[in-house]
Image (cartoon, rainbow, N blue to C red; front, side):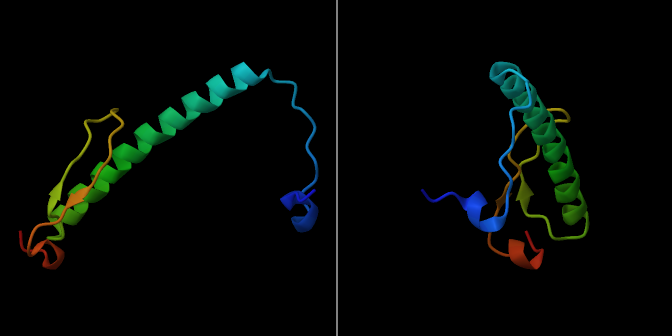
Length: 82
């Protein structure tokens, strides 16, 4: 049987005693919190880039809202001319 741990030196881990459902709930909550923080940081970065003339059209999230932040490239956006 091929298992990556055998070849990279990872030790087998014992169960941590936390029930699976509780662990998944906790990890999913942590992930959602991290995604919300990432959206805030993405929006701040987008605003800073726009302020420096490298903006384009940014779709930003309201604070606390998880959303994708993307650049809609228009002609001239790469040069800072929108």
